Length: 379
Image (tube, rainbow, N blue to C red; front, side, top):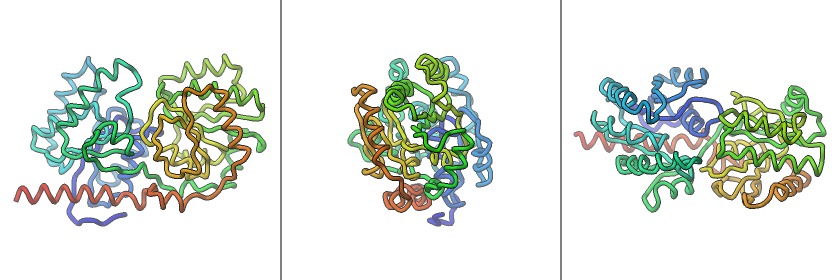
């Protein structure tokens, strides 16, 4: 852990939820875990499901605040809650907002109570995956940008999308890379646990079951693979609003015996071990944690050209257009599996700047810098 300063710095991190599987949540938790104890992280969230994450925040001296979900029906109640909160909790040095569409609300009340250091963090490369949500988010995010005084992003693609030519800082979606090192013993254990034959080839995918992740197209790809070779299985990990549609499509394609569906899990590193390739046909994405985790496990990643080209290990990633038919995706995936050897990629991930144990100090340095600057102005 980094030791950039002895002064306690209090930060409010804003995140949509605290669940397993969410990229923004992983950013908050991964960095929080490896910041020094001089940085006190409180978390404001709108959905609170993970006991492990709650405990981590408390163990580090932080607090968790649960706010109602923001929508048109409860906007006045939400604003009332925020006003009440900041009237009692205005001793933060920094507000770090990872929810751009909620940022103007948090920033307004933070400013009202004289909190000046406001970070807006971009994790995506589009405003939303639903048109009506885009119409809602565009003006909110533009307002949040005007109110923030520091910009951050998970990748250059996400930063350029939200901030255009304005200056921003990239914080890699770094992971605990040593936890993902390929381990044959764990692979055998989990193959047995999942009742998978050792000679079956496993297509892996981890992500929220939501339209932007494009799992329905993934099922089309998988169906084409099964036509080419019956010895494939799909391991699909995640939960979300598309669950019923995905289950129905699995039945319609007669894939019930070939698709293993699992809810979000606390230990994804072990499930990567059974995969033979990782497929991510997202409609848009910043720089997905799952792609980094998959590569840290020695897996080749096949993803859409809509995903950031900053996935670290260039030799272990293939980008395909979503305009290509599912059959072409299947052919490429089959070819990669048949010609790819798995290896230990820990040193490469670390060198590329995606090991959290070495990356967290960058965020702490920013917190210390802006906190010192703010204090010197007060003096």
